[in-house]
Image 1 (cartoon, rainbow, N blue to C red):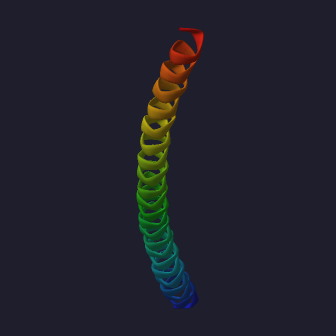
Image 2 (cartoon, helix red, strand yellow):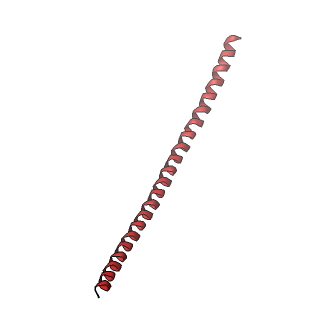
Image 3 (cartoon, one colour):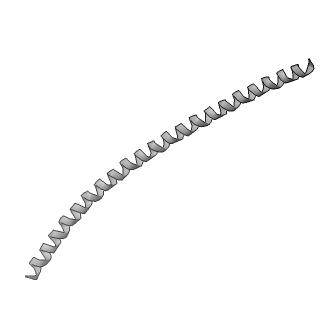
Length: 80
């Protein structure tokens, strides 16, 4: 009878450990999913900022090109 009680206690503890292990695995899964969402959000934000910077670079490049053209034209006029 004592062996049966001991076995019953061991099985109950094993079930408790098994349940706790499953809870830990679920926690890890939740953490992993939230980190993936954080990374996606950060990459989306970086993409928006890069797009804004590229727009500014294109604008400034266009303005610089216009000024270079004007300067070149003035230089040619002054040499004539």
